[in-house]
Amino acid sequence: MGKRELSPINAGSMADIAFLLLIFFLITTTMDVDTGLQRRLPRLPDEDQQEDSSDKIKERNVFVVLVNKHDELLVESKPMDVHQLRQKAKEFIANPNNAENLPEKEIKELPYFGSVYITKNPVISLTNDRGTSYGMYIRVQNELVAAKQELRDDISIQQFGVKFDELTESQMDAVKNYYPSVLSEAEPKNIGGK
Amino acid sequence: MGAINTASLPDIVFMLLFFFMTTTVMKEVNLMITVKVPDATEARKLEKKSLVSYIYMGQPLRSFQKMYGTEPRIQLNDQFKNVVDIVDFIAQERDAMDENDRNKMTVSLKIDSDIRMGTVIDVKQSLRRAQALKISYSARKVEEL
Image (cartoon, rainbow over all chains, first blue to last red; front, side, top):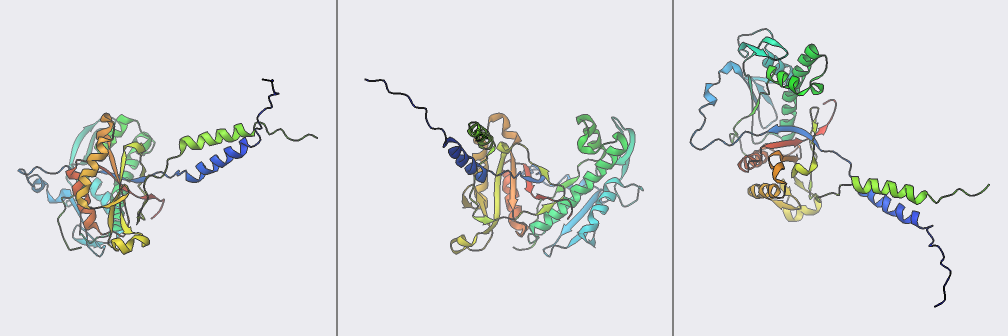
C-alpha cells in the first residue's frame, strides 16, 4: 500500500455545527424560577381526638378572617377591604397599645432581647367559602404573610440594624419567637356549593 | 492586512454550548391547561428543584375542550387526573426521591387564579392524607399589588 499524504480534516464547518447546537439549547432553555408562598399544612387530626384544642383558645386571641364566594372579606365580624387587612393584622399580632379586644400579652425571656412584653400566641384563622376564587385566597394569604414579615423586619432593624432575611440563624429564631408564625389553615368546612 | 484568524471560534462556541447544555432544564410537562398563577409580593424562590413536585390546575386548553369540557381539571405529569389520584401520585414521587430527601419534599401548587377554592380545598385535603405537608402556592413575584 502506498503511503498517501494525510490531508488535515477541514474544520471550517465545526463552528457552524457548534452554532447549530448552541442555538438549539438556547431556545429550549427555560431559565424561569418557581416562586411561591411557602406554607405548611397541618397534620390530619386523629379520628379519636377531634376538636378539643380549638375551643380552648380565647376569642380575643383569634383574628377571624372570612372570605365569601363573592370574594368579600369579613374580618372580626366587620366587612373590610383587602387593602386594610395588612394594617389590621399587624395591629392584631403586636397589640402595641395593649387593647382589651386584642391578644393577651405576657413577659417573656428571649435571647438577644432580654425580657420583653409580647403577645401570647395570637392566632389568625382564615376560612373561605368553596366558591372563593383562588386569586383572592392568595391575595389574603399574601397580606397576612406580609403583615408578619413587616413586623419581623421592623423589630430586626430596631434590634440588629438589618432586615430579617439577613440575620443569622439564632437571631432569626429569637425574632421568630418574638413574632411567631400565626396563620392557621382552618379545618375546612364545606361552606357553599361549587 | 490578513484575514482574522478564526481557528479559535469553534472553541468559544463550544464553551457557550457546554454552558447552556449544563444549565438547561428541559420542560418536563406539556401543559394541557391554562395556568395563570396569581401575583404576590411575598413570594419566595423555591430552592432545589429536584425536591419539588408539581400539581397543575386550570381550565383545559382550547384544543382539549372538545374532549374534556371547560370545567377546571387537575394535571399531574402529562395526564388529566382526579383528586383521588393525588395520594398515589405523591407516593410515586416520594418513591423516586432519595431516601434522605423525602421529608424535604415540597409540592408546588400551580393553580390558575380563577379557580374556585372548592377544588383547591379537596386537593389540600388529599395532600394532608398523603402526608405531603410542605406546599408552596405558586405565585408570580411582584413589587406592588
